[in-house]
Length: 321
Image (cartoon, rainbow, N blue to C red; front, top):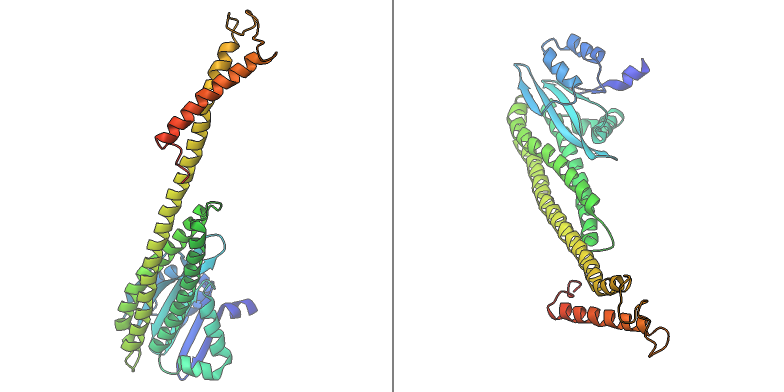
């Protein structure tokens, strides 16, 4: 019984009832069905589902809304959190999986603080909905600032050849993509809500929702800029990684090429043939017992030096600059 009370609670203020349901079950929604017979059962199914797209269903005496907001996740960066809302004259019902911490904190504050409850719920259900959306959009701004901070950190690492940032850039791209998908739908929903929620408020809410829309637009513009920045970092990291790989391959190729004369001469003198200074004809001894070895090394070094000077003259050894 105590668990059920924690999962579904209602706050009353000046004739306005705010019911918050976390991790809804069929029994929780059945209770709503008893209290609000006009609620459609398809909307209940949408509340239980976690894959619904944002939408607004309009009815004669109420409106059903589904919104998406981001929630931090240790593995995937951000995930979608669905918020289902029933709004009508004198009541507001929020249904979610308990992942929207700002919403939980707002509900707790209204429950224990009478002054805060009066400020949040003192006007109408439409105004209360504005306060909830405005709070979640502000939290979205805070999450965006964290992403921007991570982008600034990556900027310092992109040009560090000793550090690989491919994974960090990929994670940032995924986070930005998730946020953009949420904000694109949220922009459209806020515009539509300005018209739909007005019928549940005596005060004009246009300016309030316009302020929220302005915040959402700023988030969207910041995400577009962040997306372009991360794409530049991705391309830069790819170019620098490719250049580094090419330098390594060029160095290895040069080393292998310069070793060709030594390999050829060593292979020839390793054959069982009559060669000057070879085993069959007798080694040279003009400079001691190692005269043949000295001769082979000098010929190999001269050939490698000629190749090295030629490569340098035509610019093949300038890959590291």
